[in-house]
Image 1 (cartoon, rainbow, N blue to C red):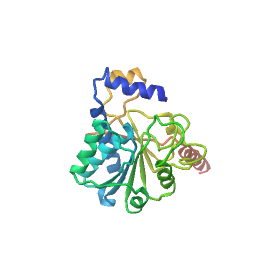
Image 2: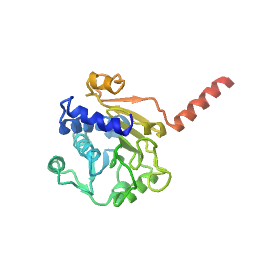
Image 3: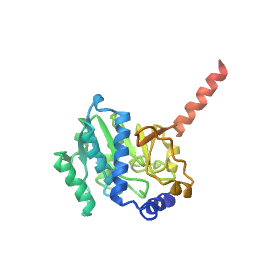
Image 4: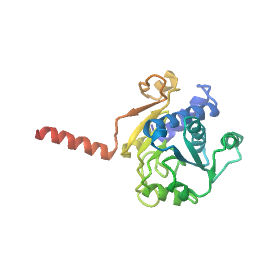
Length: 245
């Protein structure tokens, strides 16, 4: 699904699908929380640092933070470019009402957390990474703390994957959750991949030629087989090993 279709899908969900932006963010945020729980349950360390950008991707991160709190985590939010939009202000207030801390020092917070959610830039990102996010993405590139990226590893292009140079060129987090549907950048991704979209009407899925995954039980996410370059190389190696037996 290219950038044009991904944007059109969101519009169709809010028009023909009759979803509000609040509803979509709530569903996406819950999916993010469930993916974190699958990857890194609180028993493995319950401190989660959620990095939020100024757009809808950041809004999904704010909602996910609230769900993470209620699922037994101790989240901290890095949200340096707050917007005056009433929806985002409400989401921030909800977190403050739970005494969830906000930090201005991402790198220091990164040193004391067990897990990171990258909700900075989504599939619509283009151009160069600007401050204050240049140093944040550079830190994500080098940290050994596991990361779940939301819809796209921040700084990646929806079609072409990671940038050829600069912040994000070597950024390939542990996991990625694609919201609604996978984007072409997943072909460059080397980690664990989840789909979170258990709200797509069949008519909308058909319109965009999307296969609705087989969600199990009450799960809002489905893990898919890896498709990136590293995964493909590993498949080839395993096939060769089988042939040598």
